[in-house]
Image (cartoon, rainbow, N blue to C red; front, top):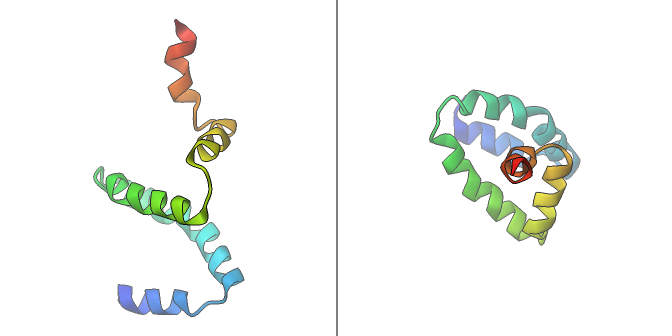
Length: 81
């Protein structure tokens, strides 16, 4: 099966099936892909475009991520001073 075949099959899903597919496969796919250190730099603009198109404020997203420990690494140096 090719990437085009997979894309076509996924795009044919209804909205709820697409959501389920994303939630169930994104983390395992990303885990494998992150073995390539340049992949994150390719993924980040895609993710930011999704956030921008959604209308979600980036600052709200950062605050939300911090609630789940996503901001703990950035906060540690300031807190240690």
